[in-house]
Length: 335
Image 1 (cartoon, rainbow, N blue to C red):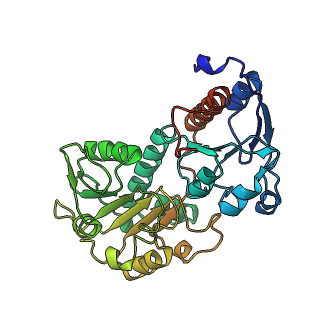
Image 2: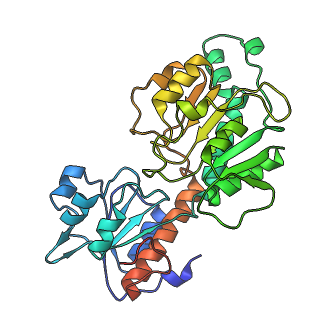
Image 3: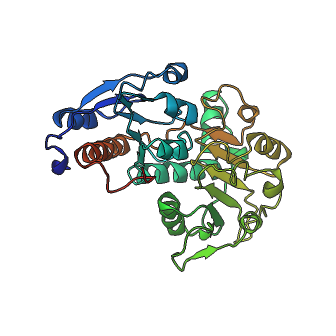
């Protein structure tokens, strides 16, 4: 597996791993002659130049490398030349600032696709069948069978905001359940004929009882899911079932307006909300916690043994390639 990356590199890099990396990936890097240091660096440390002693840094969502942190990580003697995001989302990296400083930025977009797809479908089914509420009530000694009547996802419309790898994986599984698939993504061109594309995001909400978020967090998508759009959702499925309205997001925090969703759960416009990501993490206190229709997970969409192994080995491959050749087959910028 990935035998081509096991050859000794011509340059031994000093690599900081701030948020963890698989043992296999660390072994591959070390076998290739690189020096790996695994330790979380606080923001204050990074601002004071703690990463400037390294040639590369590998981060996850817990570490932010914005303009100030990137500038502090480059010194007269060198500093970081490679930023690796072990995962997909890069809203915690200022790619423009990195590019100006001549630093290449890479992520691993395909490595966790299956894991995120599975969790998204899991949240969708848990929402419509009240699985979390059923567990909670049983633990409290209540046999709530009569009030936990759910609805099938078959015969309903699923609206996808964003149509990348993960979204298409969700679409395929949802279609196998009998859902009609709709999507909004102004940046894609080739789309399977069984997906109905929308030119406006609002028509997704007005057409679909089930919504799944799969876009990046940008100025355009911040608080995209809000009270105005939730109020457009029909509440009645394509098959005529009064199934209510359901929203799932395993994308990025900040796309869903959590306060608006809390109010929609309270007033009944929204039947369920399932989130794996939040505007502020870790989530300690939130009005969402007081609604039976809400359930969440602590940003674990990519947290499977398989995904972490793939993420690690793919990142190790990119690092080794960069320090052998000065470039990579794939990057997010032109450093």
